[in-house]
Image (cartoon, rainbow, N blue to C red; front, side, top):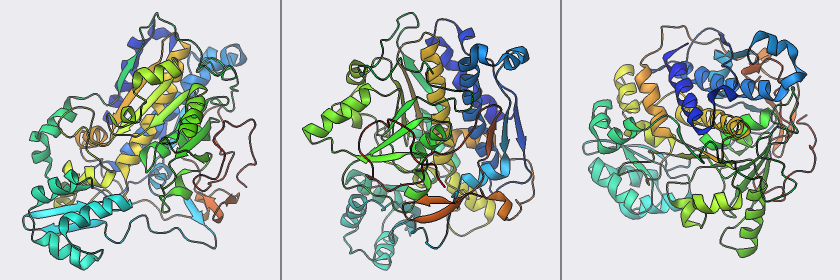
Length: 493
């Protein structure tokens, strides 16, 4: 077991205190990695990809083992859940883009202003994909929406002062810091003290009632699950957007969960929607409208899992703090993500993967490793993807905890803490570059997305006895009604 796998397993094992007996959770499965090579990086990005996906697979295996009960005597004779296999090469490729459009193209995931800019004393990254974040940055700089004008204005500023001004104006920016500077920074110190996954829940011997929706079944009881689709019958309410949370809920959809994504009326992320909505239905609600709030609360009452990526306090600001969530659904498995950690002076700061890489020293270390003249981030948005798979692992562990006798369970993760995991692991073992993508790496079937036909990379995870697959093709945001599915829709063919 690698150091990253070991840390992840310890983080998941910390949840045992939320149930009356740790023995109620199935034994850890055997994890096998296949594939040769590694992504080029100062850090072990391929190791992180394999370890995080393996963690999600291990929890699927545990959950399936406890669901099978007397339906799988062979597994009981082995004394534990099924084996798990992760293809390191495919895992690394899924950390990029898995969709391969046919006859159409994905738009750029970045707007024209987003990127790295040289300041008077270093570098800063502006994240301007969202219109309100772009307006905030341009207002501070006092320039029009023109990249050359932005670069000229940034070149006159000091990095830390500009970062503070943009963030204070509601925008998103990150000065490039070194690993050492982040280690002694107040936020870096706070994140280092946080667990990889922070668990909270009701006392182990205090059972939580079923959701208010009488058709929901007992939370996490797996009553609709089969050995082939272990999460069938599990309803996941997904309030996340780019990129970690949607990756996690996509993994849950791959093993049968009914994932309903909810977006506000004015949100879009065209560069990644075809990538992350696979297997889900996408609806829209405006939580400033009374009727939509009522509908949201009905959906929440019938959910088994809630996944959200609001900054600390932001969901409470909408009227849904933890006591309200528990009142609506006492047995809810509540999995939340933030960018910069849940404690410390930056806990409420807006952030994204690329910004956390700049803040935490990853981009600066990459620059020195590559001998480059500018920030050198990871070859993929690994913090997002890894945290997403860890969220999926936490969600499935939460379902198992509920079934084992715990009350409502909450798990908290952050991009910055995942960055610390990657940095602590150090460089990976020397490895050759991966072989180029080949036709054999793609699924034979064609997916009828809302944008046109596409193929997908083969899924990198295999859980013995559990079938992965996506019952729905990728779809546009707000393209489905805000209701739980009564039945499975057409396969992604």
